[in-house]
View 1 (tube, rainbow, N blue to C red):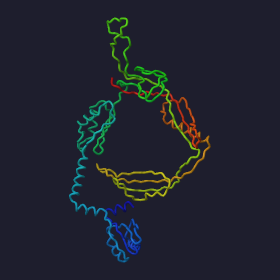
View 2: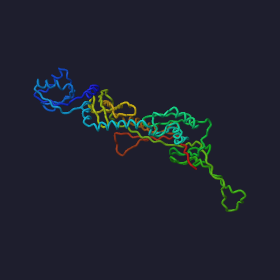
View 3: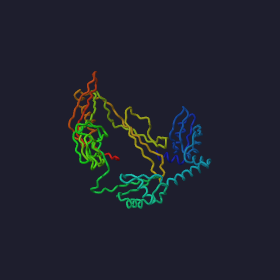
Length: 414
């Protein structure tokens, strides 16, 4: 069907209105003589609208006389009529050709350069070295040698071990992988801060200064182990005698280190679950209905099927296929397939014990989804929520207590 409609568009077709005492005889005689008519719609008792290819209009005149019918052209469509329309508007056609040529010419240059994967090396440094090899904004794509750019970046920036240059449209993406030296230590000043709220259970410090102690309650972002180590208290200037009542002068400044340590805390997670005593459940019946359409910008043309779904209850799955990209032109044409799957409802009755068990499972599942894999579960508590008025619904709240490392590095500038 799609191929037929595309062919009809190329050859051109007409939308005609057929009127007479027996338009059905007109349609039947045309079909018997091999003239294909489609999208036949009755508009009145003695009038129909249909579509026919341009090369079949002439034989229809003889059929109209035989069946005592008349037809009138309502609309012309297809490629031949667009050509005639453009011939009358040569300025518009030349402008469109000039626009496409300018668009193609401009799409042959690089207008955006993006750097990914860099942490220690700045993007400006990578772009500067890439520019020495001919890759920069405004450079023509046919002059860019990606292999040479990759080699130049790896040779001139020792911290980069691998480089990949990818050109897509007017955008170039430079992906880099920085070199990792075995035994290399990150010496940037860093705090260890809390990732989440909790109650400190134990703290083990390898380097840094403690900012909290066991039993403290912390919130997300709070410093646990500081990378700023203050000077020892009571240190005084060399050669100065300490006098009673004098405050000692501190001469040594604070030290800044990369804080390291483990901070274990008690963390609580909450989950909620409910179950109905009489629950409506849906399941698939296996019946489906498919609709195919072609979408061009904001206009959608139904190719097969219909949007009038024959199901009362259903779910949909949508699959979209875009037209392949040609050179640098991305055509805004999509083939959309919508699959409708029929659902059937039935009611399931449960005893209160069964509903309570199901609600507990759902509450625990909701709480466990929040817990990271390295956490140790210490305790689980389940509590049914009792309301003032009885209802056909069981509600359960779950609380899970875990022990986990809540520390995370955060770089700071002294």
